[in-house]
Length: 242
Image (cartoon, rainbow, N blue to C red; front, side):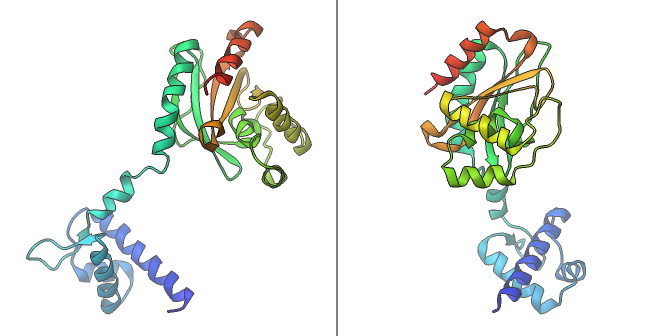
């Protein structure tokens, strides 16, 4: 089978699964072939393969098809489960010490994806949600992660980075961005003030020391609650996590 034929089969198989998932119950073959726009022999062949793998099942005594039990494994699996389990106590520790919003994020292409957070109980707050993404260039999380990269990987990341004008405080050039990252490498923590959200400063440390080089934790604090004394305490606490 050629690569193009294989791709077509995969696309058709996924289409069948999506259709069955949307129907929510047993579906006769004639309805499946009509909805998928494929011939009966092709549908039977693909459904048989999916059934053998456990992604499709047939109710006892019937000839209809429905979603199989193995699909559940795909929907419940979490590739970041171990990272979140290891990082959660660190988030709790920082949150209990300062009662500010703390975040766990990973680098995804040139963006930071937020995986977990604990929100401050104070009225003035900066809120993120799991699954949310931000350009890495304007986040302390992204800079902390980038600060642990080797020269080649860092150069590739920065050279392709988008620098959106989210706020007036954001870095203007890739050279400025690289400078902030190298400064974070030297200091052992990264920061940004008002570059993602005006009036909010974020400070972050990489989780590379505990085996997760693509991840970092941060604390986000409204500048009204961040005098220099408190800022130093936060930095010390973050650098003492490991």
